[in-house]
Image (cartoon, rainbow, N blue to C red; front, side, top):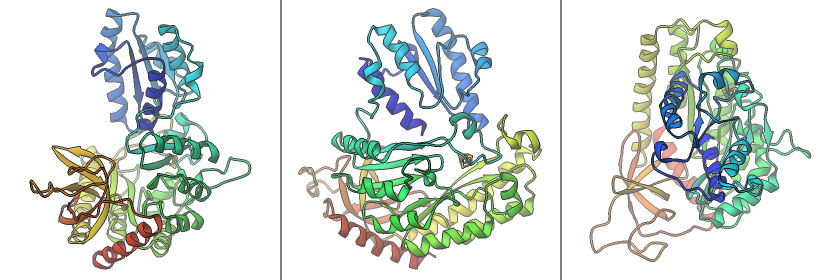
Length: 452
Ligand code: SF4
């Protein structure tokens, strides 16, 4: 979400005539977009603000702005601690920054405020569809900083996706802290399935993903949309956070382990070959060793394709911070995190090995250390083997070399827990939507049969 916010602000700043520079020390305007979801992220932000103090003292005319989750509804304390900051902006409140910069460069920022679609988007880009969160999990600071859920309209989002495609985008990831609750505040009421269907119709768009789901709000209708809409990728991120019912209740997640497993079963039954990722917290206050074992047990039972695991980090202002002392030693939290990573490395090794020798459509989205890389519909990272000199495959772009934005057909030749490698089988093309869906389901059912 922060990355998307930064891209949008960048678009507004460019409309005001600004250009990006490499280092904050070189900039006339420095905007720091902050995350405070864990203490380490907040420490990074405050450390960086400290480094900007001498820059502001040496160049008082420069503008320093802070936006994002660090800026709550009340931030007088921050203003006192960091007088070098000129503008404080809450998440997605770009106006204050654009107006301050507009004043500095002598341009009326009004025209920029309603047109913050990224000007030069990546071919796979993020689109926020619902801001804020109404869930109030006891460990989470997000609802206090990003506020209550506010959905953007279907028409606005369809228009924005069309603009992004015209600017070269081929894949969008629809974002929400709880993306499945999209549309409940709209009149007439809409849901994520309605939006997916509307965005499916955007010409030129190849793939649609969405993040992050909540087990209680991921309805059968949404799951069926993933199955039925050709452009919607069969990849679901469904955080479970803890495998023990008492810990889940203390977190106020609103579901039991059994209900979570039922949701996983429904997704797998409805969407053949679906890949699943999840989020997990280890060392929540009061989590015993036996309760933690329940999280490991759930990982073994589900066999996720990827897990984002984090050690519990107390966030002042949350219910957990007020009522549940964070007394578990850091060493024990680290041991639990290492145990999660060990299980997951083995599971991912086995799951990814099942991709060997099979063919997948990969959308090329970048280059790392001289090798092109891309993602399957299931969001597997694939590095593309270079073609032998003189035997290059003709690509969509007519040349011999792959380019970012190409859809290529790859045969998987190597696997690791974290990525795959593949060789172009010479079928680079844009598939017709119906063919694309049926091929994906076919390839994924083979993977499921081998791996699970
Ligand atoms: S659903 Fe997600 S964003 Fe909302 S309170 Fe819970 S953890 Fe935080």
